[in-house]
Image 1 (cartoon, rainbow, N blue to C red):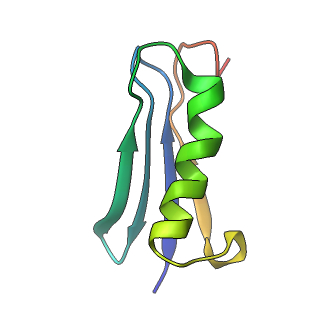
Image 2 (cartoon, helix red, strand yellow):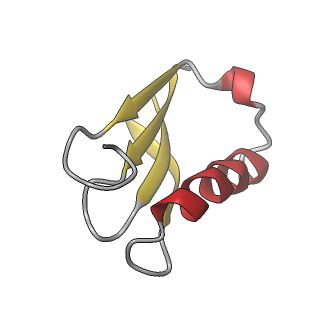
Image 3 (cartoon, helix red, strand yellow):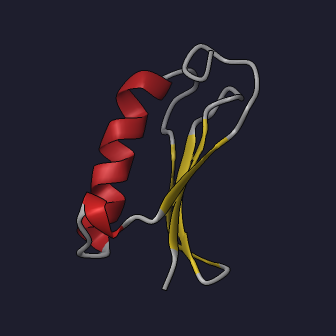
Length: 72
């Protein structure tokens, strides 16, 4: 299974998900607006823990390209 970590921080609310074989396996949305820097790392760890995976189990990372303090 190919696993892709998806990060979207271009908008007010941050979003992180892990997809595999065309399906979303787990996802997290920031609890508050514009909290991307502290949210992304915790969300990734939470998803990996939930799915009992290691960072090395991720095959690719997809990042939104857009405005925003975190992606800038």
